Length: 317
Image (cartoon, rainbow, N blue to C red):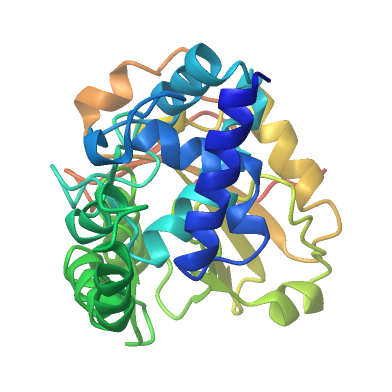
């Protein structure tokens, strides 16, 4: 890096430290991410900082162009999880200010420096900076509460079969997962126990690890779980449901993955692909694995069985 780049990064790390961030959130990566979000080159005056809405890819491209630091595509998740998420939690950065209910895993997700934080940053190095920083830091707890409340309002309310409430992050396939929990379970797994519900935001929205272990299932936290797992005690079945609106149905490859993931199960396995509509299902007809079931939310009282000798039941291996 050039001297100008080194100096700008070091000053930005100092700024993050003064804003209350720990070592991890005030390291070089975090400083570069903030500079990209401010659209500041190594020579841009602090007073000219701006706050465009940028996605993770655009942030990484800005860093590469102006700070000679190339982040490989597979590090995008690191930037998102270990810098941007913390910036959002601290109310330094807003998530999707243009569309707060945008799904968290949407490719259109954007980040923007909070207006109050931008005011402090633009004054950085001037006599006005200490007073603005003190006022901003005093307001940060209330800002966090405001934005946490706003995010909570956009979450999707779900009622589990046992009546317990749950919320999922907004949009995306979670709209379909809500229908799977409330409608599919009502019609096809009465008395069933929900042992797992996935969420793009939290991944483990419901995770009854001990109950799964009691059925011989040791969950690999790095494995891709189905979106919904329901246990039927009376039949000793584990019903594995995939929300196919985003990632597709239980095809032959996914069938093999799930079979391996639940290989130790003492309960019979039932595989179900769930779609928001029959129109959506038709796009995937050629891919759906045999000996599985299909459910469409727009016709909740009907199931489609893909061959085999049983209808909604496990097969002996």
